[in-house]
Amino acid sequence: MFKLLDGPQTLGRGRAFWACFLVVLAGALIYPVFADSYDVGNFSYFLIWIFMALGLCLMWGYGGMLSFGQTFFFGISGYAYGVLAINMGGGSTTIAALVLSVIVAMIAAGILGYFMIWGGINGIFFGIVTLSATLVLAFFLGQTAGPEWHIGPARLNGYNGMKGMDPLTVGDFDIEGSALYYVMVALIVVVYIALRMFVNSRIGNVVVATRENPQRAEMLGYDVRKYQLLTFVIGSGLAGLSGALYTSWGQFITPSSIGLPAAAMPIVWVAFSGRSDLTATLVGSFLLLFGFQTITVYSQQAALVLMGGLLLATVMLAPQGFVLGIGKLVVDRWTGRRRRDANPALADARRLQSDET
Amino acid sequence: MRTPPSLTPAACNRMRPDMALVDVKGVTKRFGGLTAVSDVDLTVNAGEVHCLIGPNGAGKSTLFKLIVGLYPPTKGTIFFDSIDITEERPFARVQRGMSIKMQAPSVFKELPVRQNIQIALQGRFSGAERDAEEERLLTLLNLASDTGKLAGELSHGQQQWLEIGMALALKPQLLLLDEPTAGMSPEETFKTGELVKSFNAEGMTVLAVEHDMAFVRQIAQRVTVLHLGEVFARGSLEAILQDEKVAEIYLGTTHAH
Image (tube, rainbow over the protein chains, first blue to last red):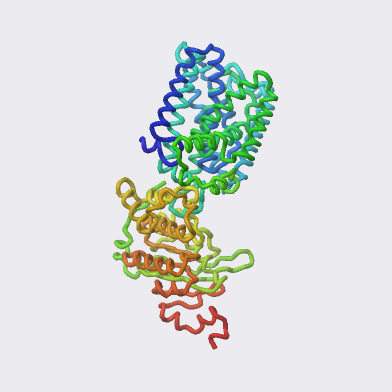
């Protein structure tokens, strides 16, 4: 198990790394004691998106599949949570609604992924098809304003969005404020650890081999399509988790959380962070979301412009990702020696290469 | 994600001496108007080293890709171990006991050497057995001191060796080699030949597409010559080497007459 945690596919290993991990975790756990409840709520809000980023990191960085469809599954799961929570009557059933809506997103990912992967769609076309699906869903939900668009008592409400579902509840206790914050932190730790173990496992070995050279991987006796589908379903399921949590957090969801600007966001977070590593994605997405949230308070336009600027800067200055680059630099300085395999030519070759795979 | 049954090649071949391990029957492959392979029959017997030779454009690589499953044939049937595999995808054929070394080194360039070997091994071995096999292969391939390097940082020859090692890691009944010595020095070529012979001695059947006649002389027991997509000649190495018509298509008419 420890071998899986510190395997070849994840940067950051050894005592120093895990000590840092525990310090950060401890900081996160005592944060609500010192912060006011408004800030804690805000934190919970932007931690919601971390799952989506980690899922994209898995698909894009490890699996070589650039999915533009994270908000597609976010939306499916978000709306599914609304429909289920309203239809099942709220209360403790919201937990079941959360689980079921993530499963719905994973089934949708299984179907879309099956047709794409078995149909031989890869590289840039993978992005195009997933983006198309995302836009179609956003437009479809946008035209559901009429009263005929309802599932049971749950009205879809077009661009105004769906509302009126219960938040996550156990018995009479609404999971809100600090409780929700702790649920988020726990979920992130579980997902992060599980993903680390996944990418360092035998399956993870085949996933990265498929990214590097799908034909060669197949020639070693692996049905690479199954591995790609599995990666796609897990990555998209994590977007679904974000979606269901989002709906339950705000008790509403609109098509605008699916459409183009929203769909581009996970790509920016993951590209900026360094898509080839889970830890870099976790840290980078957190920093970006935190910064975005802070700036949005003053000006939403400024925040969007900053995102665009960051994406440009990443592509031009640090194609492998800023957080990953800085992290590697710090580690190199810290250990006082260059990693033997830190070949600059190869690091360059690692730039945004998803369209080649 | 099924783990293929791990029959040792030696055991397999002892059970059926001189049986056709690969049987290609009347296979044709057309690309639009071009017939790359035309009604070809090819038999590779269990336990032999069989070379597929012929001038450029003879259809060797196409035939090879048909056997591997990278192309579907336009017509004809391919049997492996008496099972019709014509419709099977490459991974399924590999699970049946084929293993392939592609023409250009196609190792996983951005992964360390050791991980390349592990990815190849993990389908067949696990635990201590896998670790032992890993070390054995790395030593055999002279890569033991480079395990931490990225495969893309190896020299061309070393990448070819790593690629051969990955093909061998599967413990195949049939090893398919597509120009295994391309870009190798004569010395490396010779060493590769000895390696192939040593695995054949342990019972592995080998089918190689090869340009380098010195290499063919070194390893081949039987030879099939392709010319313009058809079988031009076949037989033992000695017979083929003395065949004037083969020399003719290889070297042009002036030499033969």
